[in-house]
Amino acid sequence: MASSSWALALTISLATILAVSCNSEVDETTRWRECMNSNQSIYDFQVETLQGEYTDLSQYRGKVILLVNVATFCAYTQQYTDFNPMLERYQQQGLVMVAFPCNQFYLQEPAENHELMNGLTNVRPGNGWVPHQELHIYGKIDVNGDNHHPLYEFVKESCPQTVDRIGKTEELMYNPVRPSDITWNFEKFLIDRNGNPRFRFHPTAWSHGEVVTPFIEQLLAERAN
Image 1 (cartoon, rainbow, N blue to C red):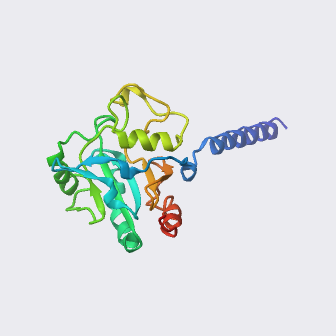
Image 2 (spheres, rainbow, N blue to C red):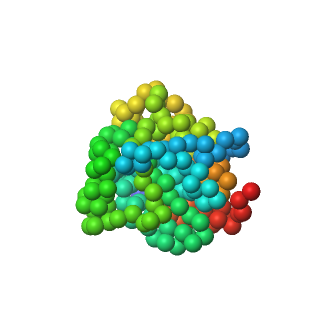
Image 3 (cartoon, rainbow, N blue to C red):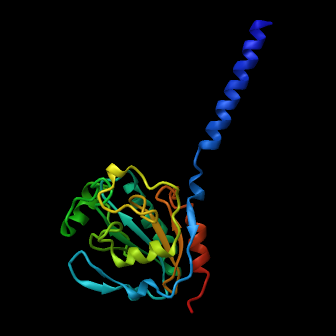
């Protein structure tokens, strides 16, 4: 009797532990938010190229844009290998990607602008990787803190945060830390054909692009005003 009671108690305990574990697991597919309407668009902003020249984002007018902050020495850097196939699949329908290297998350993008492409080709992802012609990589910027780029100030104000906690403050190389901050490298914003931010995705909401693909297809099906 004692043995069977112990077994029953153990079974109940294990069931409780498993239930708690399952409930505490994060479903990465839910780490996205819909953005709010704004009187601005990303066409209002200029950005710096890797060559140090300034250009208007209005050049992407009428395109669907996946905006992403990137870093070479990050665990998420392998997402680069998903970008090219995604663009190959959707470029004819009007998808482009716009990427901004950033060194504010644990100093994972230490390279200067002129060194960035060599790092991507030869280090990570490496193996001779080159970006798709519709993957446009710009100069390094700050996405958080006092010196955040106006573009990122705009998209953060337009789109709610995807998680409750930003991260470990000792790994965040900027001040001040704000609730709306970009959480880490490879956070993404999906911009519609009118230049409006529509969706925000946590860096982990990816799964080789499967999480964002339905949203991309939704915006590609819409016409520009």
